[in-house]
Amino acid sequence: MASRKRKQNTAPTSIVEPSSSPPKENKNTQTQTQTQQHHHKPNNTVDQPIAPPKWGLILKLSLFSIPPYLYLLFFHYPIEQELRRSILINAAMSLAGFFVTVRMIPVASRYVLKRNLFGYDINKKGTPLGNVKVPESLGIVVGIVFLVVAILFQYFNFTEDSNWLVEYNAALACICFMMLLGFVDDVLDVPWRVKLLLPSIAALPLLMAYAGHTTIVIPKPLVPHIGIEILDLGWVYKLYMGLLAVFCTNSINIHAGINGLEVGQTVVIASAIVIHNIMQIGASTDPEYKQAHAFSVYLAQPLLSTSLALLSYNWYPSSVFVGDTYTYFAGMTMAVIGILGHFSETLLLFFLPQVLNFLWSLPQLSGYIPCPRHRLPRFDPQTGLLTGTNDGTLVNLFLRLLGRKSEKALCIYLLGFQAIACCFCFMLRHFLAGWYK
Picture (cartoon, rainbow, N blue to C red):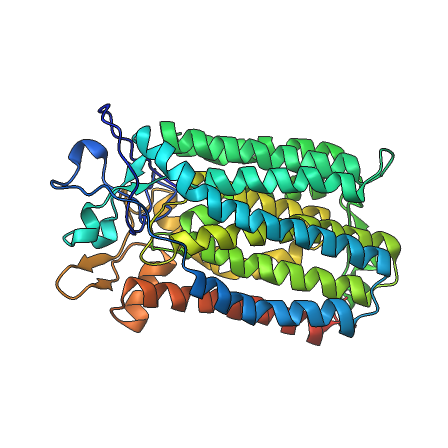
């Protein structure tokens, strides 16, 4: 995320009504439709309980995603009974994590408001919702529940001498480190240079514990020219994995600015990751390869379920802001999943909108073009519509191409593009299979 909004008076506050969070941006990062600094707080601000979770949204998403998941797991592929059992245990624990997260977000909201960690929605400035205090950094709830589910799952799947246990715990250490950094950033506003450096340090436990291969398969059309089919990159491969962790962590953070976008894109990518891994498990005959993709499923399912719980509060009109805590946590988790599942190329295709957003943002992020604190669209309180600016973000680009849109409609368009990118990745893998690799 990018900036934080922390009021400095001591008056405790109670919980709030829906609103959304604009990105706060320290020259290179931006996240939810965050807020104004609290010493510039609007008059007549509103304190009231947050809106209930949007169960209708969760039901629609579940009806869309669960049937293909169950079909692939039980009918399409002959997955071993033991492996299917572990995946289902993890799914059941993830479901429990969903309900715990839904229950804990209102509780956590009261506490963060008491500590004056709240924001005002810039994309609703000039309307009654623009004066509502919105609890900030609620990604901490998702991160904690995720870690609890992931830690408890070890007792159902790993033995003391398991080869995967060291990598599993190293992955959790990386995720925990980034969640802590995100929460510190929400409270203290960490400089952006530090945000670029620390993800690479956070990835070190995983890179040190990584016991997988460091080789790449040369594309078949290039084999006659290069003369080899397998290339061992050694330390270069681990450097690439470290850079992947930095990219994933920050890419969620800068592709933001409207209600539901940060969590929504994570839900779409995590869903694609789960489907991809189940397809790879079912299609492979290599036990080691299957276990690597099962490992990814064990982390992707709790990420998906807890993110859905947060989305039920963060969807337009948002009643909580996710904060840098969530964006860093989600980005590092998906990077860890891709690294340990050995599908980093596919992961980058899932991240295609984030890659395009980064490239489009590069002139501003590098300082070549002036970068404002908030790279948000312009909001017209008379019509309730957003207008794109010349800032280099995918959010503004969509508005310039498609015309003025409401915040909710714009988020649906952006998440639709994210889903199309994931479908494109599946199609590409299908058509290139056997020819490219």
